[in-house]
Image (tube, rainbow over all chains, first blue to last red):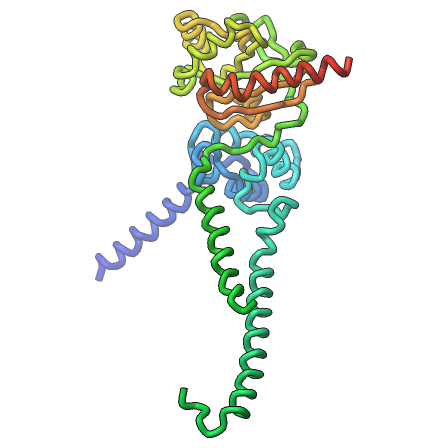
Amino acid sequence: MISKFLRAGLLAGLLAVATQSLAIDTEAAFSDPALQHRYESLNRELRCLVCQNQTIADSNAPLAQDLRREVREMIAAGKTDDEIRTFMIDRYGDFVLYRPRMTAQNLLLWAAPVLLLLAGAAAVVVVVRRRSQESDIDTESEGPEAGQS
Amino acid sequence: MKNLKFIIPLVVCLLLGLALFRGLSLDPRVVPSPLIGKPAPQFTLPSLQDANYPVSSKELLGQPWVLNVWGTWCGGCRAEHETLVAISRQGTVPIIGLNWKDDNAAAQQWLQQLGNPYAAVAEDRVGKTAIDWGVYGAPETFLIGPDGTVLYKHIAPMTMQDWVTEFLPRIEAARANAGSRS
């Protein structure tokens, strides 16, 4: 019994430590929790371009460290989240964003699911209508033999 | 007419296949720079050899020039260095080095041992100028026009072939363009 409680307690303790150490910085960048929250969520949106499948929040590559420093300095200077995103896009392009924007170049990509759905629906409507017309004609012309094929 | 309908999925499939096949030969590590065609970011940084002597991008206006981002920690930079030295001997345009997050003594030693292709080397110890230029992996080489716009970015160790096919024609075009305007 006691060992069960001990284990549970140990696990809870370890998990608490683990979630704290998820942030890659050794200490909080801001003492204000609201600013710290903005800092962390921005870092999670920005791509580390050296290690392309990681955000700068996940990576300790020198470039990711530098970009986190830029984010930190811009937040401290009172820049808005959009201004910080624009700063990154101006330098590294849309690729730096993990959450892509809708732009003229990728509009087709954004619209593709809707367009494909509409095309599919149109095709279904056309096919169903034609089939029902054909089956009407079939039953009329073929008489008793209909349904054997 | 009815038989032609069977061709539609085939054509769609072929087009999709072609697009995906082309995707296989694209390098995802090469990120197109949003700076092309825009004014080059300005910088004034201490010279690698003498911190009292600043290297400023403003002084280079009026001529095409090349910015090469390098560091002694970068293997690709070692690979392209010989080519840069050979290019600098031709004297077509000044090559400005941006020494990115490097150790000053190591960088100076590198230039003494391997030769110095640079008209000037700006020292970016903290990496802020590199971020302004959208640098993410050395070596990167930019071509800047006489009017101060970025004309081209090369992301890989430079080879003589890159220089001849990608840089020289753009330099000539930029010079012809600037000549016709003045």
